[in-house]
Image (cartoon, rainbow, N blue to C red; front, side, top):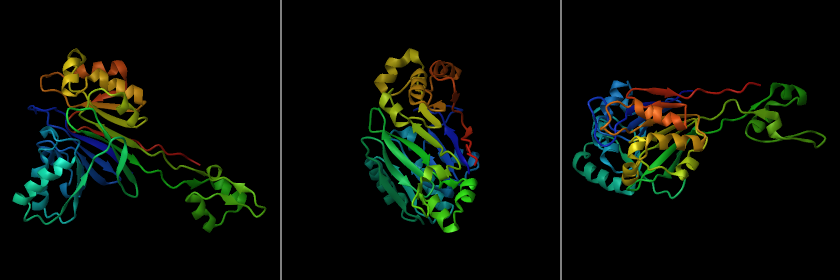
Length: 310
């Protein structure tokens, strides 16, 4: 049951010779999601051996070019590869206008449909779910309307303790009901609560994507207790005034968000092109949150499954 994130781009507005604009690919149980789509994303997807037509959902944070200019080429390539299934795109309402104009000119021959889903949230809200995953959007603090995304596995059906089955001679029909949340009612009327009969087979995993945003205590609340947090760190703390003016964060501030949110692991990226040596970002973020790692092109971070035994 895979749950992993691959970093495709780590640069902010200007790409560098070795850093691409923002994009992450998420694999949840072999279902693939793309978060942001900066220029060159399709090349990075190929380089990291992703099958482009297996991506069915694309989440765009905001309408700054380094976060969505790669979308148009990707749509065309998907068509050339023979895509037939609908592609779902999530983002600000103005993105639909841009997409509609593009598709009028270049999408007439597309063999698939682009389905747009507007994101317009004032607080954290569910915008997508399937049988195994739920995605919530939440507002970030940027110069223009911008959203973060939180991907969380749904809680699995609970397992029944084997010794409980033996103790109460639970039938197969009762097992099905109990796994779906029912209590056990004995012949004498005694009720055995579901939480005493069952346990979670594993702990649901979570990943939050926060780019672009100025430092915000509210963002820390939105991503509380996630397993993996990606948070932008465009500048080092000596440029915190510039960060505030441009609606960005420093590495130190990203670390502070991770600490306040009590996340398990922090990944920082979206580095300004002015920095040739990005190791300074890591040292700075670790002052606030030791379990921090630098985002790097091609880096894959897997969130291990924590299983609970009977």
